[in-house]
Image 1 (cartoon, rainbow, N blue to C red):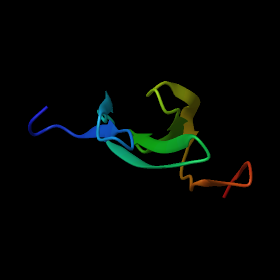
Image 2: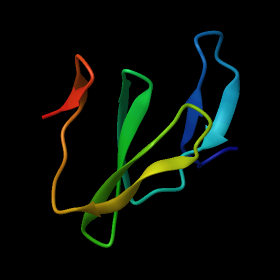
Image 3: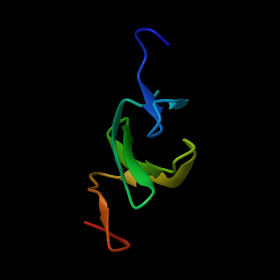
Length: 66
């Protein structure tokens, strides 16, 4: 784990490796991830739940993405 980026839970336990080119913080259970210039979203287990098909994306708020 040394030298790697990981998502951790509130207790400090590593949950999954942040192996994405760019990633954001969680908002409403999803985090933005960017690869090859396209944005999508992962869930709290690291599963891609919204494909990377957007040129840009912001966090979710009240169930909507800005």
